[in-house]
Amino acid sequence: MTYTKEKVAGAASSARPYVERAIRDKELRDNVRNAYSSARVVYDELASKRKVSDAATRLAGDKDLQDQLRNAIDELRNAAGRVGAVKRQSPEPMQAARNGLILLAGIALGLLLNPITGPAVRRLLARKLFGSGNGFMYQGNGNKS
Image 1 (cartoon, rainbow, N blue to C red):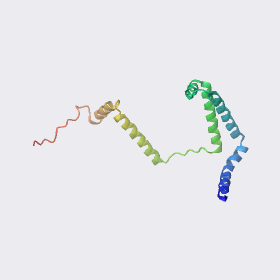
Image 2 (image 1 turned 90 degrees about the vertical axis):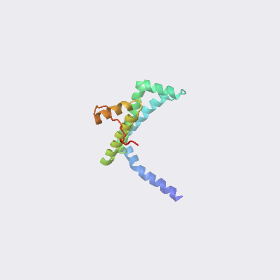
Image 3 (image 1 turned 30 degrees about the vertical axis):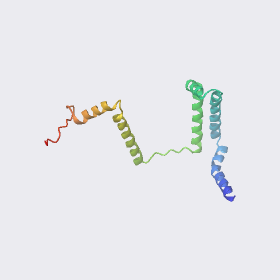
Image 4 (image 1 turned 120 degrees about the vertical axis):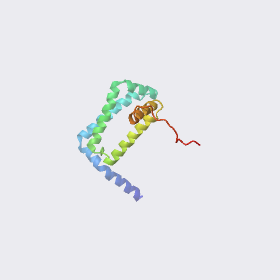
């Protein structure tokens, strides 16, 4: 039983700075309130007894709903920035270089092995690397058995 009480106390103590920040920071409260109201407008417009596809079609075509949704997302981002929850760090240089190399290799393989673009890309690559001659002709090793 004490273990559960300790867990609750630990959770409450870790949430305390965020709650205090929300109490003191008027701009944070405004951001959360505006995000909620914008999301509520979008939800009220889309939530009905219609199909999901109807709601998606309505959202895709209605600029006002898109603006409301964009506003809700912006307000939530602002609130997260005020709390400090969003901390994006740049990856280490070696990790970034490795990821870039993997991405480049994937794109190259996709172009080379794609049945639509592959043959043309392979011909272009062969011409650039080996010249515009007739290409390579296999002549064997010359031994007659």
